[in-house]
Image (cartoon, rainbow, N blue to C red; front, side, top):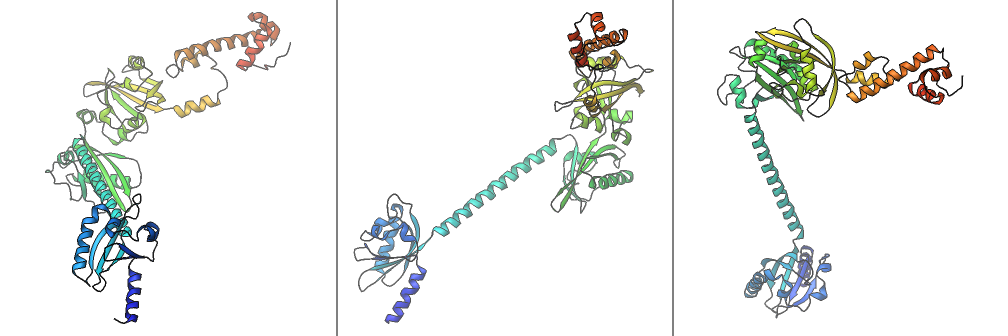
Length: 456
């Protein structure tokens, strides 16, 4: 081979290999050449003169020795081996892909090494990404399993409908049973299905309303067999997809017999609570459930209303004791204790009625917290009469009422004394048995007249 061709080959090899080693006939490192920063990790002085197997990681020495033997036995041929090189014991090994070629004329071996750290890093990133995908996959599988188990456990029918195509994507067995369909017959079908014409029209109107609001739209539909169902719809938008979440529930016998499932009951802006004479809840509308932070009407029915109404159980007993068929209760001030632990000031009106031979108590409940807060924020005087104090029974504790009653009586007596003495402060103080300074202090406290500390 000419010297020019030899130089071209050397230049090409130097541009391709990150590190080049020359081993002498005793397999020790004779020369080190590198055009990259590898010599910073593998310094020349630490390698020249050392046996090549001492530079190789201990776990790779066996395959490195086999590669040396193969290269020496087959002169002029290149043999590849992947090993890790170590210059010093305290340094990290560097992964290399090494090509070995033995020269017959001088028994030296040329080794061209390519740095595999970039490939190793890429492979590690690939492994980490694969592990992350597997973890996400199994996490989604577990989440889906819990989701399906919960759908099967709930006592109400539940459907997920694609709003664009109208097809049912998910449905539990309760929904299939309520609509009188065979098991598995809902998924994939266009909804509504299993309803009569009137029920289908009502559901279409509810779907149209649900698309225009973020709240849950409540209504009533009828199946093909004429069975009434209560329905709740909400629209869920995620990216370019829109889903309709539909809840179906059979109306209870109490609601059906008493005619409590109509729109007027469910859509009333005031809370409506229906109990028996013992205070056990029979039905509650959506406004009351929202007010009391109750998730579902079934969580309220069958329990005594004093779980939420009144400061204690006494309030409900007093309320029920004052309701007669010919004597409704109006504007009864009380407190509503929500499921979240907060308290709302309410006004309650109640009436006793007969439905299907049963005595029922219909309570109409209105949240007046904002009204009371506004009144209290602008009020600068104490209640001006005992009637005003008694009107606050149920809103504030008894200790506060007693303290306010004492202050009211004291303020009324001072005003009466000033009126009798024609606003003579000294005479009024003597009439009340007070010192003048004490009278002035009370005048300032109750904000009566000109309370500046002057002498008459």
